[in-house]
Amino acid sequence: MLRKILCCAVMLAAVGIHAQEFFTVMNYNVLNFPNGSIPNRQDTLKKIIDFVEPDFILLQELKSEAGLISIAEESCVDLDGDYRAATWETLQSNPNSGWPLQQNIVYNAERFTLHEENVVLTNYRDFNEFIFYFNSEELVNQQDTAFLYVYTTHLKSSQGGDNEQLRLEMVEYFTAHLATLPGDAQVIIGGDFNLYDSAEPAYQLLLSDENAIQLEDPIDMPGDWHSSSYPDKSILTQSTRVSTIFDDGAGGGLDDRFDFMLCSENMLDGSSGYQYVDNSYYALGNNGTCYNENITDCMPNFSVPSSVMNALYYMSDHLPVIMQLQLDQTSSISELDKNILLRSNVVNETISFNKSLNETVKIYTVLGEEVLQRQLKGKSINVSDLSSGAYIIVIGNKTSLKFVKL
Image 1: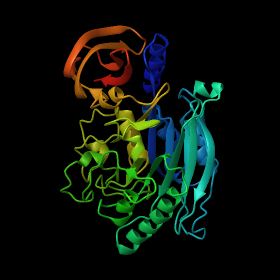
Image 2: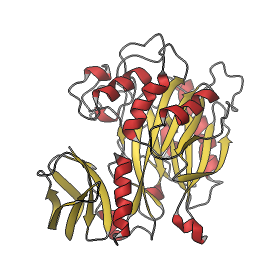
Image 3: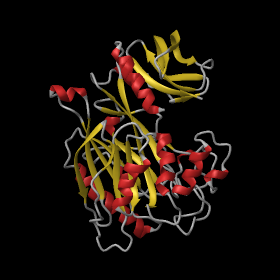
Image 4: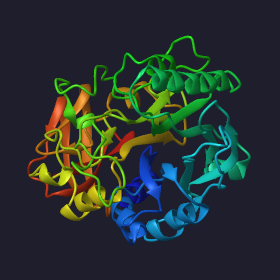
């Protein structure tokens, strides 16, 4: 669905509307992939990937190069684009570990070029670095392109002071590495961080304003994520199951926020290049009503089809986290662009904006058919008459944004 929306945005740009590129990033602990007693895990993962249509898939708990390649070649086979795996890297930090786990990335090479890849060594487990640039038409004219620095990692698991210290030490290596990057570098780091609460030193260091490149948690929801009293259960990501399946993975039901994506501050403040799309970060399949249960038991859940919910249950003991980025291909993001982002990309009856507007609004189907035009005066517009599906909303002939009507 998202790919169709992007195609529509390009088409609208051809008739004079200022267009932006949108990208979807998914971070997923795929649980000892492709090992395990459950057969055809590539197909199980494919159901999830087909639904999300990510451009980047940050992966943890890979057990083999063949497994990584199978994600690109089998699980992504029906997506639009050219999906490739980065170079396989075995664990270099702590090479004598009795439980080596690798991280890597699969990406859409039709949209992005992998410029460089490296490993950041720590005392326990690697941070894998991937430097991308967008395949812009401007490259034909020898114009500069913005690099995107993407990292994936898996911090030490389990509670207790010793494990918290190991997580902190890993992060210390990473924040030291940030000082080697250009000062305006745009950074995403995703992974299974195994953090139990926001007071933990590793989390505090990741977000420290003393880092050479300051990182932000896009959803900014601190607290004791492991506590039953934490109010917003929709951000929890582990475990998808009350009991283990074939002795693989963790049980206990959904009660922890272990899986994260953080962005550099310049990706949230509208200052340059790649930008985080407001309110686009979520844990796939978590409708906010699930706690200490199987995710398949927390019904009704209309956030994903039942086939995807079942795939999430069987695929891993973690839920993937998703977010979207945008890139303005013609100029830096204007003040209007920064402020009119939709409060939510998924709507029922009303589209709400972050500020009052006095602009002409047009809404198009993904095939380019105009279905609504009216003058917007305020912060919202009623779309209850639209059929369910994906649309593009164009505001003042300047900005095109996507949304999904339920």
